[in-house]
Length: 156
Image 1 (cartoon, helix red, strand yellow):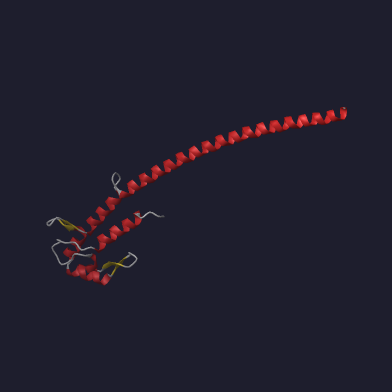
Image 2: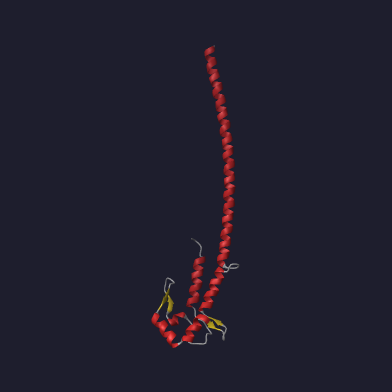
C-alpha cells in the first residue's frame, strides 16, 4: 500500500513486451506482429491464428523475436524480460532487495522505538506506584491521627 515498486515492475515489463526490437534482421520486430498483445489492464492476450500464421510463414523470425540474434548482437524479448527482472530481483543490487533492506531497517528502527517507549512507560509506572504508595501512607497516617484526635475529644 502506497508503494509503487510493483507498478514499476509492471510498467517496465509492459514496455519490454510492447516495444519494437531493432536489428533482428527480419520482418518481425514486435510481439504484436505475431498476435501477442496487452489489453488496457496490462494482461497479455494471444491470438492463436495470428501466432500460428507467423510461425508457419517465418519460424526463424519468430524465434529471433524471442531469443535475439547473435550475428547482430541483438537480444530478443526473453533477454530483455530477463534484464528487467534481474534489475528488480538481483540479490546484491536489485531494486526489490534495496526495498526489502530499507523495510528491514525501518522495522528495526520501529522496534527500537517501541523498546524505548516501553522502558519509559515502565519507569513512569514505577514512579506513579511510588507516588500512590506514598499517598496511601500519608492518608493512613492522617486517618490514624484523626482517629486519635476524635478519641481525645471524648476524654476531655
